[in-house]
Image 1 (cartoon, rainbow, N blue to C red):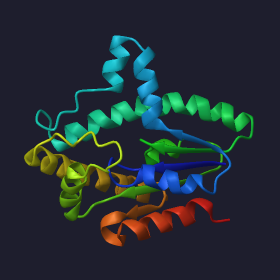
Image 2: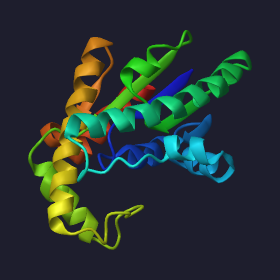
Image 3: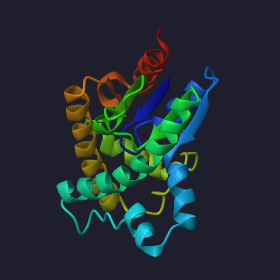
Length: 196
C-alpha cells in the first residue's frame, strides 16, 4: 500500500513523516529530497521548472500557487513512475511532500493519503516565530524580513485552502493545524495513515 503525506510548506508534513517512520517498515520518500537530487542532474531548462521563480513579490497569490502546482506536477509525474514499479513489486511506500489530492487520485492502486494544512490567521504568527527559532527544521526563512514572512504566510494559507477544497472533492482527509492544534492534527493524521 502507498501512504502519502501532503500539504503546504510549514504545516507539519516532515514531522508527521518522522513520527510515522517509527511504526512503518516500508520505504520512506521525501519529495523535497527527491527534487534536490533532480536539480543536481537535470538540464538548465528542467532546473527552472523544478525550482521556478515563485516570487511572492512578483506574483499574485493565484499565480504563485499555479507556479508551485506546475513544479509539483512535474515532480509527481516522475514519482508516479517510481510508484508504478513499487506497485509491481508489492512494495510499501510512504511519500511526503508536494502530493496533491487530485494527483494522488490518479493512481490505480490502493493508497491512503493525509493532508496537513493550516487555514487559520494564526499561521502568520506561527511562520514568523518558526523563522526566528534556531531549532526550526530546514529553516530557509530565517533571514527573511517580517513583511516578507507575513505575505508568504498569507499566500500559504490560500494554498492550504486549495488543499482543503481538492481533498473534499476527491474524498481524502485533511487535518487542519489551525483548527485542531498541531499535536491533535498530527495524532489524527497518524491514526488515519495506519488504521486497519
